[in-house]
Image (cartoon, rainbow, N blue to C red; front, side, top):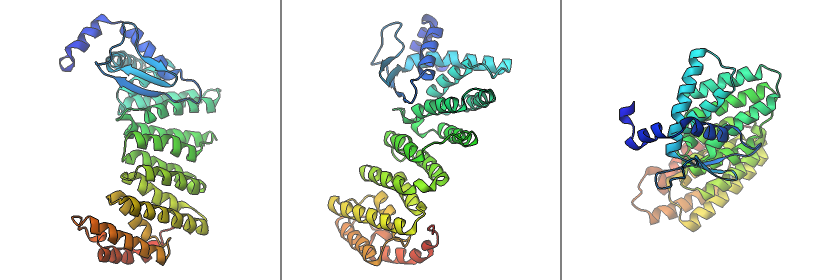
Length: 337
């Protein structure tokens, strides 16, 4: 293990007070103000801190040197092993250790599973269940929305959040899906574009609460127009539109969104694949009228003419018409009535 470490890190492991560093960082992660998410960033060697200063903080914005996090990680790993050997899961301090481990390594499955066992054990007591659940959600959401590239797309963290929401349901604690999609999923999607893991979680949220489909679709449409090359959000927008339960509202909103996207695509000459996969998918659902369908084909032909190097079948006028007409009727039955 030590052979793979940087000599500078090894020197600091011997010279610095690792327990003090661990306590500072673990306390920072676990003692957050209620209803506030930390916005965490890592500092490299180019931003050294004074001795004894283990992180910088300005409100909810936090910057932690990578060296300090590595030092805290070694202590946290030792503590986790100690808890595993003792078989004790009721000690709340293990939550501090797993928090540091997941900040260092978002794919640390043992740390995530340990937090699950600890949370279940804590909920078996007589404490305020809603407060306990929301504190765990607050910690996970801080990792998912911070400027941490690996964390925002971590399958382990998103899976842990999904498991956590099942506990919310079991304890009759409501979670607003529109708020979570807008403030967690979309933020993670901004931090890490084409974040299919985050948008898959959005599908999970919406499938559980389809009555929120219409306002969610409006929010996501605005996100898509600001991130028009991100195919993951466009794909979710199709899903959200098709989830709207009222047929009249579904058709009306779909027509409005398509009209806006077609207008902007034509005005700004959007020829990227993401937007046109969305338009093609909507065109075959039967949610738009014949006139709008023809507008789609006409704008498609116009944009193809300025990008002749793109000769994919569906991007040509006849190719698009044949593809859409082939699947349009068969796809209508897949839209919720």
